[in-house]
Length: 158
Image: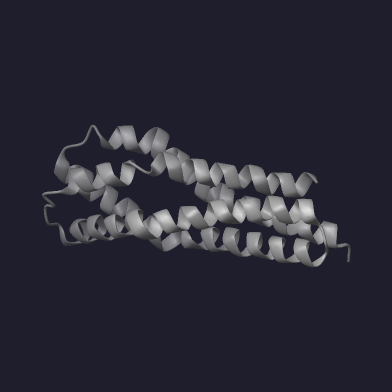
């Protein structure tokens, strides 16, 4: 089978996985963040805790798919000597890995605290501060995902 075709198919799969996460992060930045700012502290913790409860269980599927397909795109493109494809896919992979690092280091620990508080029904004195810290990187996270989508689309049109 043609390595360009396979590389492009992998890139499209990577775009689809990345687009799910990108759309979620954009929604959080543009809609959820300002809406949550209107809630009282207890409601904020309850809503964000349950949002993260479900998000942290379900969002790894498209995220892992995106990173795996992007990695496979890089490997296949390098193996086939498709240097422009490889460069575009590698650029996307770097963006996705930076996003993952931000998520693991900043967002996930906050998600766990808010989820635990919501599930236990207890008040969280620093809930608003935690949400503010989470919000402080949502635009960066969305930009990284968007950049990865663009780079992966570049692979598919080369």
